[in-house]
Length: 83
Length: 224
Image 1 (cartoon, rainbow over the protein chains, first blue to last red):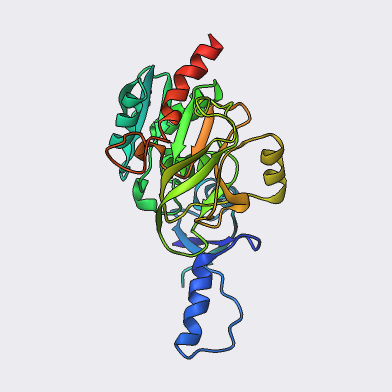
Image 2 (image 1 turned 30 degrees about the vertical axis):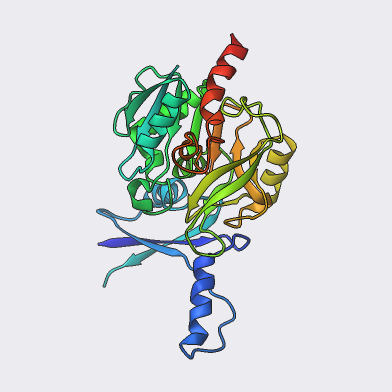
């Protein structure tokens, strides 16, 4: 089954308190060298048919209307074919 | 007036909002999120809580509930709509109000008696207040940080769409200390603090929140 992956990230100019919390936790665990962390969401959409341009357009609409909030987030999508 | 209070799955303050509506002198009408029906109300309150468990983003799922189709359409015709806390988040997700609400900058849930200044008393929900009135109203949120891009901020400041601003402490990292905003027309108001918890002397911090519920009548008389 083809899968479309949608990655949603907070826009660079939007504060990401969750990423900040992770950044703060890393040195406490002994990890060093990380200067910033941004936390986002990953959606995996399993599709029933072939991934055509039309289907991708639809997924793009899903991402714009529901999966992300364009006011505070950007998204990227890509197709993954299962082996 | 008949004021509808919408209950979503996960709403917490719908009953308090109904009570505040009644104390404000109106008839409270329970409205169900799953109905395409506003039951003939003259105004709508979207109450606080954690609708749909705040899944995806606060308010993101509620925004597509059947009743919100009706609310968005009615708001476009000028129906007064007040969104409190989660209701404010739903209004932003619905694009009835500009901007968005993100997690508090200090990452903790905040619950406090919050000092506010009412900066716009020309909305359907704030006409009972004097402009610049300073009030104290309960605030409780985890994702109450108001954000918007620079152009939007300039626009809403310039058009006087900031309804209320935090005083003394910025409790959640909101840009420009913004606690509440309105749309251009002034019928839709979103507010992070909870005026419905400040309507009786017996409980809470006082009755400073009552004005949000008495303003409706004043706004109607002014139109008549």
